[in-house]
Amino acid sequence: MKSGFVSILGRPNAGKSTLLNALVGEKVAIVTSKPQTTRNRITGVLEVPAAKGKPAAQIVFVDTPGVHKPGTQLDRRMMQEVYDALETRDVVILLVDASREMQFSVESQVGHPDDEDLSSGTPGTRTRHGEPASETGGEHTSGAKAPSVVGDVMPGINPRPTLNAEPSNSSAKPSSARGGWRSEDEFVLGLVRKLDCPVFLVINKIDLVRRAELLPLIDSMMKRFPFAEVIPVSARKRDGLETLIEKLVDRLPQGERYFPPEQFTDQPERFLVAELIRERILMETGEEVPYAAAVVIEKFEEPAPVVGKAKKPRPLKGGGFAELKLPVTSISAVIYCEREGQKAILIGKQGVKLKAIGTGARKEIESLLGTRVYLELHVIVEPGWRESRGFIDTLDWRKQLEDMAARQAGEVPEE
Image 1: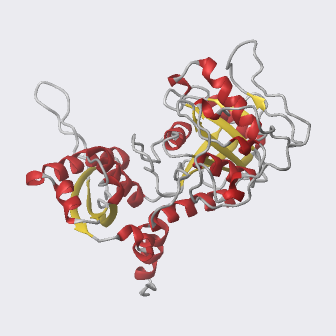
Image 2 (image 1 turned 180 degrees about the horizontal axis):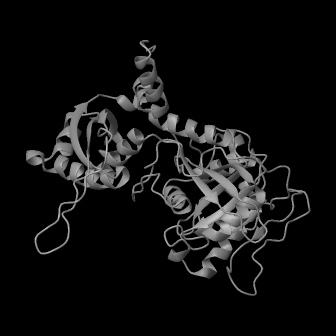
Image 3 (image 1 turned 180 degrees about the vertical axis):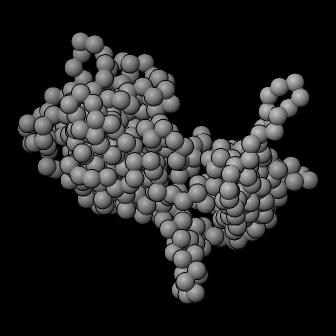
């Protein structure tokens, strides 16, 4: 038996949550087209059965918020979630969007910056897939074994770069030495370079580009870090996922399960419900409203357990049986925003927008819980909540569970 933790790292909109859901086979993370949808560490558990002489395994995937330059206290908390996910891991997946231009300075091939500052610097040279605009600057010269490239990127062509054994130009200073990271792409690589575990380069959205376009991206990334594996995938089409899982299992240590076999996430239903409501907000609203919205579940009343024999379906005239009504879960949630104008947008004219949010969310929640759902939504203005550390703490489901347990024990949680 093998088991271990695999953290998924990447820029916003790289498809981390889509990949997590596809790997686990359940919707454990909300997915929208808007960047920075994920705000917390999301855990998904995959059971891999033994096959063809290979042991069974349990992979605990940890999805993280997209790596970005923090502008608010909420952003800083999101980045802390990233750091926490990298603390305990056996393998890290660096997920890259094949359809997005990447931004690197020429020197990023040479330097291994240790500074974790995300302060802005002079913009680096930007080209398709991060290829340098000139030939200056050395290549990555780590002594690690050249990574393997998994997948038929271009038949007959070896996409591995030739690693330069010559020492790089010592006079070239890393970008961090000149006042901060040139781009968030470089910052992600800076995080990766600090890790002491295998790092997989997983190139997502390969269905959106031509195969020949992957080669410059692979070459550029391999010059910057000796990835253990390079695996092109399409999370949306589930292409390449079996290969990814197989390679991950090969790298995991021997160990027992961390979670029961039937469990696919460690998140409580209350948090999943709050996230499904927030997902509908992201889909139904635009501009700054989705990013200024937070959802807190105020009431979550599960249906009473059935005592005695289950009711039999009522026969209908002409044959067949009437469909049994499912029990009802009663939920009350508060949507917090920062300004009155945002509240007006969330409610809409005569409550039309709030009704649309509630209707869409209720269908998803019913699918999750397997019951009918009575959903009540309220909108409250909490000015500047994204800069309030205390308020942000209350949004953490782990903190919510601790407070609930304290209340049940008759204790008053510290503010």
